[in-house]
Image (cartoon, helix red, strand yellow):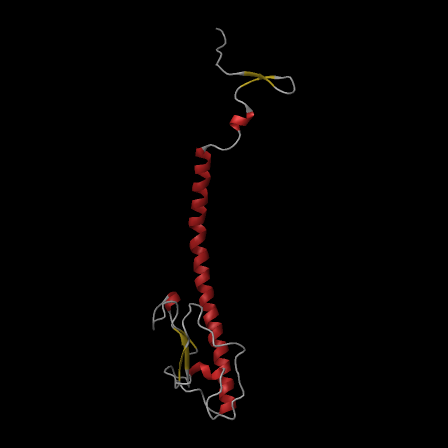
Length: 159
């Protein structure tokens, strides 16, 4: 039986060798199928990693809110030591940065910067007297900005 020849061009390379088949330029690159397989693999990896990453972001915001509540709590306690009283609910946390009217004992500002918002952009809630067996309540309503909730929406306070 004789050899079956396929109609392939015959070329002589730069080194003088004779080769059969397509030019190297024609076979360089990736096929559409190879690109689709890579895209599917990347999509699967992103599907596994993204939920874990975003849950960590939520946990970080809760931790940041707890740290801010603690720092504000300390500033309010310093205000109490200087003034022999707590800021009223009406004065709120603004009394930490601006002296209340007719208060010669005010030794603030008690914060280096303005009163921050919680990590979700909501203002902290200050109540005096407190409702959680405290002299005052300082809280963030969490991600949803509403009382109650669970997970990232749970209230974070100084109690």
